[in-house]
Length: 238
Image 1 (tube, rainbow, N blue to C red):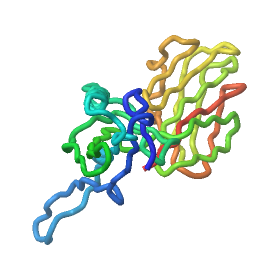
Image 2: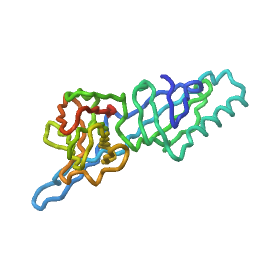
Image 3: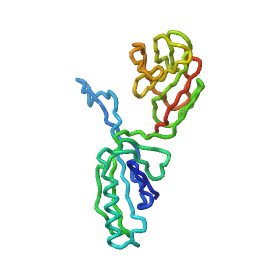
Image 4: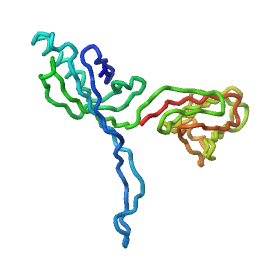
């Protein structure tokens, strides 16, 4: 057991947390009934929100007076009641952050264990955790994690009419416009947006462009129309 944090609050000084979680993600299949075929045809699957349960144990709760214990429980209630949700760092997973998490279930306090324990259920509406941030100024990338990630690419343009980045599978993002040497072109693959020197240039993105993801493993990118570049991404973990 160890501490955890949620919605900008560090619970470590007050509780020890024990993680109870499913062994794997349960997928939500999409299927189509086909006449003359038993069952159905599997079209694909969706990754639903992730649900985790933490069992909280009050730290040194048995040494508190009833008044102190009541005030501590009130503080924890207030911290857990975050209608807008927040980031969740689970015990034993300090390097990972689950975003868009919200408390969706709680149990009563069980006073059999020192100052009390309870179970708190979180639903992580972004079901894939965020790990370390990485960057690379080369063309060969080693993407860690277990889930594809969407990068941000910053290119220093050469004088010309376009910049382009292509992945090993032939997918590309092409920006066609008059560029001066030194113009900064930022491609945000998550937002599917492009800026040139801070101004929106999304209208200049070629119609066949695809804001592709970087899958885990070794990846090779090709850049044209620029004199330098940097690729930044955040590891994603199931």
